[in-house]
Length: 280
Ligand SMILES: [Zn+2]
Image (cartoon, rainbow, N blue to C red; front, side, top):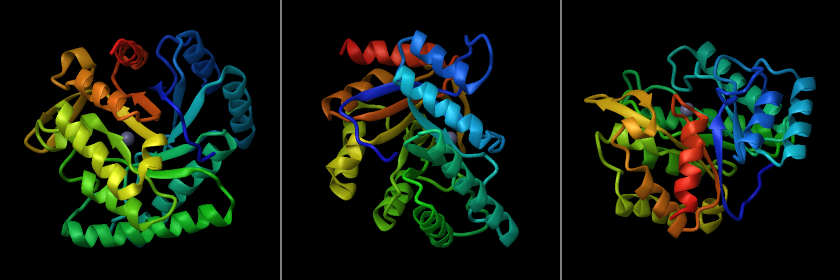
């Protein structure tokens, strides 16, 4: 369900590593035991969850008061030169929204695709048309769930801050998924201070409205980067990402929604972020 929140909730990208049995249901129970608040269902290698399991996941999340988000498959390119690949990409996002909605998730994040040989302007136009079609289907099917293009870490990938905010402005039902590690890597070291994060949040407030800050879907992790942006995710303490200042800006701005740890240690950094935030 497309909901709004009154505080920031901390969660894991997928089932926590310390979960005895690797299932979404067991993951949700483990997230609760760890005193975390949220979990992202990782459909990254394809949407394999059945409708029946989605309903069981929803029940477990409700019983344990855990908020769910969805990550759509990685194999998506809404700017492919091959129409069949665009069609399949749209279908993967749609299927993520269908199963995510059944599971009670409030938001689906996806990677839009690659610029390829296109100019950013051309890629933007093509991706916007594809996203519009997906949103129309989501609405037709009555799927009450946000769709969110993610800010991407690699320079070859569509999805800088301006692009995802513009898509959100232009298409009803779309909001940005802000990955702070990706923004930092893509800009080769920027977006790493209290002031820079405040600027991002002010821009979201100005262009998408105050309510956008009450239903945020955020990713955070440490990150290694080079000339082309993202190299790989790291644990927060191994990286130069100034996560404390980012969290401070989120707190001062009264941002509410879900922040997902995508560090390799998954739950450890989710707990670190939550504790750091609470102690600010
Ligand atoms: Zn992602």
